Length: 228
Image (cartoon, rainbow, N blue to C red; front, top):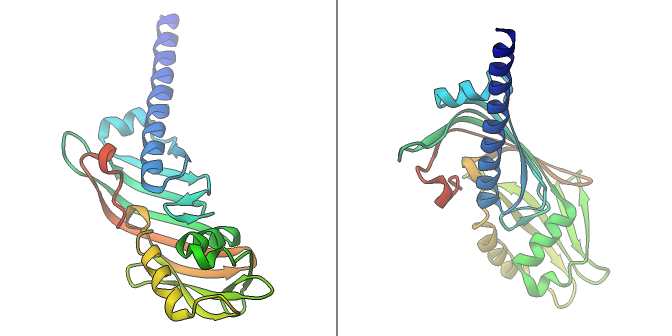
């Protein structure tokens, strides 16, 4: 009898590990599709994931990206906590009850993003420094500079407002801003996340983001999670 019980327990533990590893792998693949970055995924340990899978609802999932990028925004690690997750099943859409995230957009990441957004002028932006006192970031060199101010748009996404440009060979604000806006407009955040707090530090930009009652497509493998 004792041996049978041990076998049953061992079987349940093995099944728990297999299901957990598979679920984490599936979520990580979807995150990579939605952000372009790899991630570490962990499901709540209680209740057991076998129980959560049987109910079709996962209590909480934590996602921590590697920090390489979120789409075209470089150098942006993010930690996302999802709650009350119901995966899509049998052709029906899934949902996320709520999500909360924090991200840090590094100074080098902002520089690389701006260089990608405005390739010609971007070549001149070799140095980057932050000014937490007025919430701005300066990019350039000893001859030219661009000063930008991170801001939150009405739809909750993060944008960069060009405050001023100085120096020869650098396009005016009127030229840089439309190019930057066009680039940033494509960099929507996954899972309907929108920034409700934004601050500039010595190291970059910190943001807190939230979303609620987000739908997941029935074919997540094809379309990833929604990006807006």
